[in-house]
Amino acid sequence: MGYWLMKSEPEEFGIVDLKKRPKKTEPWDGVRNYQARNFMRDDMKKGDKVFFYHSNCKEPGIVGIATISREAYPDPTAFDPKDSHYDPKSDPDNPRWFLVDVKFERELTRTITLKEIKDQADKFEGLALIRRGNRLSVMPVSAAHWKSILSLE
DNA sequence: GCCAACGTTGGC
DNA sequence: GCCAACGTTGGC
Image (cartoon, rainbow, N blue to C red; front, top):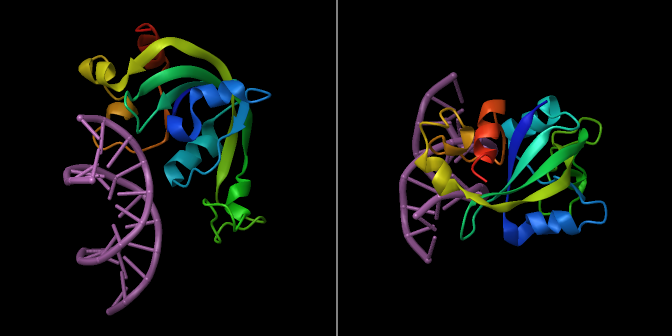
C-alpha cells in the first residue's frame, strides 16, 4: 500500500470541507505540476493512505487522514475555459492533467505541525516535506515515515 | 539547448 | 506582506 501527503490551503479547501462533502469525497483538481501529476497518474492506487496537510495558514501541518477512493482520470477543470485552472494545451483526446478522488477517513486528534517534524529532521531524513525548498503539493511518504509521524499524534 | 524573466508557492 | 526557492516560458 502507498502512503502520500497532499497539501491544501484550509481557506480554499480544508479537512473539514472534505468531511462535509456528501460522500466525504473530493476530486483533487487543479494540480498543474508535472511531478505531482505523475504521482497521481502513475503511482496512486485505490486504498492508498493520505496525510491531509494544511498549508499557507497559521499553523501548517498534518490535520487528518484520507484515502484514495478513485484512481487517476483526466482533470476536467483543464478543459473548462471559465475555470481558473484552464489549460488550453490540455486536449480531451490527449489530456495533460490528471487527478484522483480523495476520501475523508478521520481528523487527527491534534495537528502534527510542520515545525515539530522539522525539529526531528534526523528522524525524517528523506521526507520530501522537509526537503529544502520543497514546493510539491503531492508527495510520497515512506511506510516508516508514515508510522513515525502518526506516532506523534 | 541555454538562460533571463516571470509567476507561483508557502513558510515566516 | 515579504521574499527565497523553484518551475515554466520563450527568445535566441
